[in-house]
Amino acid sequence: MTDRRYAALIDADNVSEKYINAILDELSNEGIVTYKRIYGDWTKPALGSWKSVLLNHSITPIQQYGYTTGKNSTDSAMIIDAMDILYSENVDGFCIVSSDSDFTRLAVRLRESGMYVIGMGERKTPTPFISACNRFLYLENLEKSESTNSVTAPAESVSLNKDKITRALQTIIDEVSDEDGWASLSEVGNILLKRYPSFDVRSFGYTKLTPFVNHLGRFDIYSVPSEKGNVKVIYIRNK
Image (tube, rainbow, N blue to C red; front, side, top):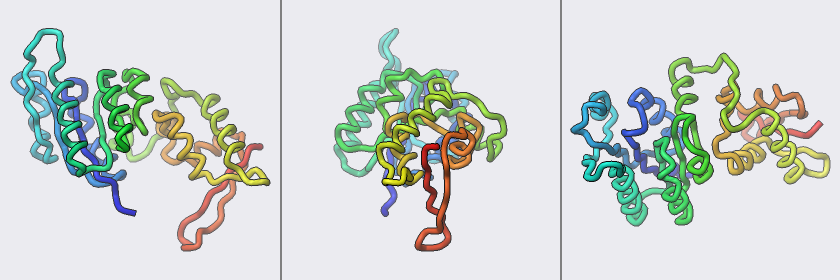
């Protein structure tokens, strides 16, 4: 399968430069980053900390002056560029990095055009923007994985808890399982992400889906070698 080509558009007004390594590393797992652009008024001292990391990561800064008090010109510039990139047909998806709900309509519009949309933002990100994305990742989770390479302290998700995820998993398994009640964990996980774009096992202190599901204690799990032999196919069933 060919890797998806992504346009990464970063809102410098709403994202700290400390996340940049985690953002690009995570996106590289998803595909090829064709565009890397960051938007803000670079004459402002507050964005000075970003300047030192742009060259190291080949990110193109887009200057956007604040023409009117109370209006966010950065949002408008990102939206215009996103539509230009969309119509160029050079990408398969977008990564919108911001904690601003103003990008909700943009995410919806891109998905309507067949784009796969990944959102990244801090936990303060409003729910409408999260729900508008195919997948949404909390920057705090990415930063923690980047700095420790593992998660050791379980933490509850802001908008999702274990009981809600357990019920969702049970429902999905009922919908897609075979006559014996078994379903592919990979398929179940993919459906769960579609229904809850912000779900991330790192929010609960895990790095993989299987140990997280096993920890819930409400499911039977077994695995069999794949045809290639070096990969296991994991199945899940409601207890």
